[in-house]
Picture 1 (tube, rainbow, N blue to C red):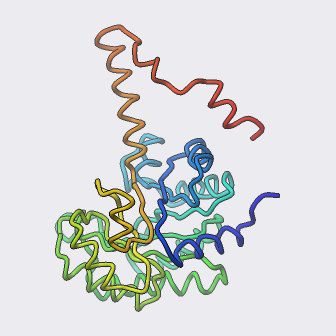
Picture 2 (tube, helix red, strand yellow; picture 1 turned 180 degrees about the horizontal axis):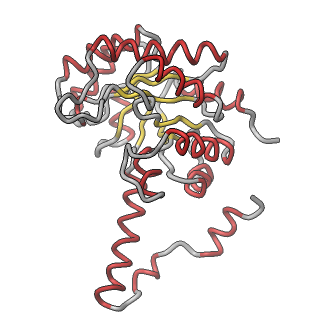
Length: 271
């Protein structure tokens, strides 16, 4: 029997109760199925990876397309899916709430909301508005009655505002506003990661791995480790290296490193 949405959501919440787990990021149904086959306990979408797969830049995909993508991913796997839901596809809290309500209907087990604006001059929402947006997302989830986990992201370290004190102020406030999990992508220093973990405990922290191992991040107190668009970039990197070699040298040597077709067919047969 397929795993129900309710079961996925319960399993996802249980994963956050203790320990540390990796939540890799597929960019399409095939990569999601492949990651599930490797034994990962949960997956997360990647806005960048999905955008590139349809010929768009990150943060330039319409909400309806993202919702359809999330529906496809969640329906293809028997493990929980967390949604990279960007800024909620709205600036105002009521717009965020509307988007979150629609996202819950896709079958996801969790979603993240960012506090970045996309405006290089003012890259983060003002503190009070950012807090209202998280509270609106929380209220929208609660109104559905679904046990969907809310991750609040503070984007300062990847949006040109690498201020640890401000990041911790925001994450602490987001936790108090109802976020279940906290996330500050771009942290590289072990001391910074540890400080964030301590600032919001006992709530779990997601860390975007930027070179530190699972063992090190677990020791620092990270509960969840994601890879963002890195797997998609790795796939694109090999594709482009192979294609460029054909275009420039007229050789096909890199094909020898490709996954065997029989293995891929075996992975997807019967679906």
